[in-house]
Length: 124
Image 1 (cartoon, one colour):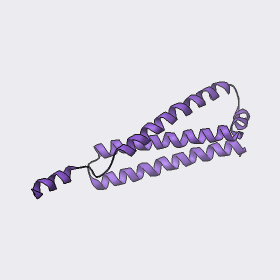
Image 2 (image 1 turned 180 degrees about the vertical axis):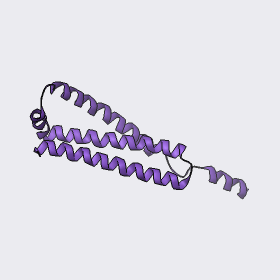
Image 3 (image 1 turned 45 degrees about the vertical axis):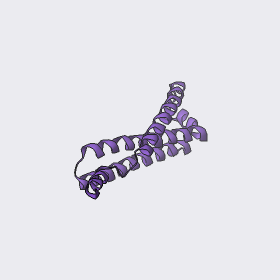
């Protein structure tokens, strides 16, 4: 009996995918809301130059929502690509390296976008 039980335990998942699934749905919902906000804002800013966008991002509300959009978008992308890597990269070393590279690249991109938003907001 212990041999059958050991085989069953070996095939049982040790991770709960529910938290990952919830975060993916939460970031998707926040992305929809934030993209709608940004599209309405961008249409309202049509024709505004750099100065107009500087004034737009000087508002903490607008700068904060834009940073939230950036963070939510890159987090959602990381969650989605993570699933693809876990499903299709088969070597454990290659999988770990791919996930580490994914995290580093998306973190650098998110930080770069956030710094750019803040630079526009303060007028650098």
